[in-house]
Length: 194
Image 1 (tube, rainbow, N blue to C red):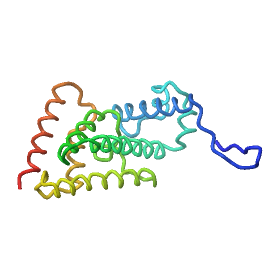
Image 2: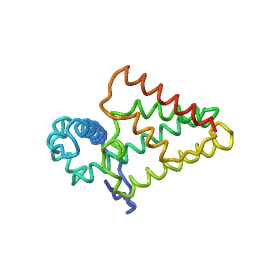
Image 3: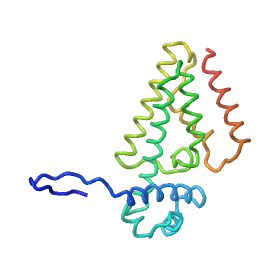
Image 4: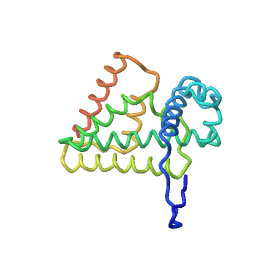
């Protein structure tokens, strides 16, 4: 919300705490409902699951496409925080990839991604977040090639599809987590083999 100060300048007022909490609750409920019922889940169902009125849904997202694009953007931004954290202290690019993909698997039920049944990013912000994520993955792959921890030819899409395969939503439990770790370790070990 814009506010005009006494000097006639316009500044942005921070959103109210309850509005921020409503948006977060709405995003979590929407992702869960979409994973459960598909992309056509009624907006009223999402509102009910979030504990807000349907007007709140439409106030934040005038159309279903707006909602879906916002959820996709948020998912890419979550992965960006994960790759940043994984890269910070990792001794090798492979260690960073391990940390990143392990975090993505842990976040599988909180994300809506094109590679796991979500829509392709449409809006400028969602596409920019996706491009930035791909740039960060490319940088890790280049780092691995330079340091010798990655000796195979591997593309950003390869890493993205591996993450999507392991991070399928709705696969709960320790059994799937063990399978994911085993598949991830097998893949990462293969990167070092020319």
